Image (cartoon, rainbow, N blue to C red; front, side, top):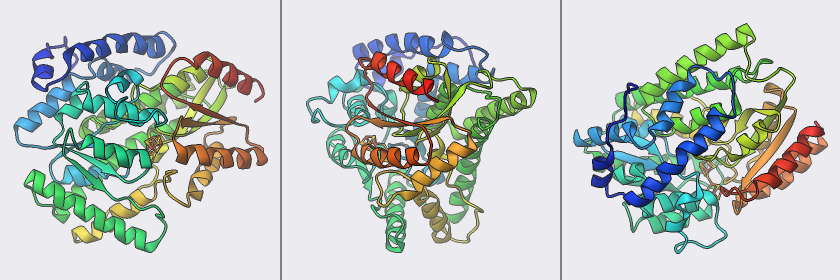
Length: 430
Ligand code: BJ8
């Protein structure tokens, strides 16, 4: 990916069957939002963010054209919506995984007739992007892989299947049980069979091992970014770190290893030099809760324009992406390796599982590691699993002397002033 003048992507978008009028409207508003949130509201950004700014600036261009070229060479594009669908398996079969989802209410018009009002913004947005033909990544996919995490998503797959082939992996509910692990392994085998059929490729231990190593290396670069955020000198804003994570869901893994790795080198150097993006006495906030799909930068923007800095996200667009990791990748057969894959993924602590005590432990540990002054529990409206957990978590964290604020919101800008007032009041008492 080289930084040159943007080619004319219209022929590609038309070929993909996008609703060009709506797509134009989306691409018209995005640069202004990005400029206001990322460029005008920040100073002393790491140079390495230039690459990620460029990716957003051409969000539906170069990467989509790369996918198109890969498709023309026979590779399949697989859309996913949850961390529980292992990228390793998809890449091992020489297919390409693309994390979909939706982080704006722009696309809701296309899904509003299909969904009840009280369903989370992420599902509304994701469905709208697909059904409304506004997202070229959706349009590029050969199949969508769903999972049985929350109820809203389960039903969303049924609706999406009228638009694209959908395959659902049955993720367990009580993930700590041995039978759940065995079941998850069988489900992963079912996914492999499905993908083998679609790709025409056969999974081997060698291919799986190689893909596991690559995706692990990719995750490790993200972990390096987060490690630097634990320092007294904070070398990157929460907004920028969030953007890096959001892009990791759909960019090429090799390029991610390189570009996130370069950024991590720079941040490590910044920490050594004491070159921070904010003063060292700035209040440090840990966010925990529902994922923030691109371009959902709302909460980070409010916090970071209220005089504080986000030091970490206990979310799927944060530490849940990389925290559970293979200790060592070894095994002679695909079965051996699949056990490692299952254990790695079952180590992700999502509120969709019961019990989910480890998430609270993660938050407490992260407060210490990232020296957070306070925690903001973030829930997308109508997300029951995270909503329920936040009530209990708030009580427990407060009891342990950790300042907490619970926020429930969606993608609209209507409550921004109200949120700002609440967040500022919270920051004042820290
Ligand atoms: S592993 S967090 S990516 S399920 S916000 S759609 S839960 S109602 S996204 Fe998730 Fe996988 Fe868990 Fe992560 Fe439902 Fe809640 Fe909406 Fe959600």
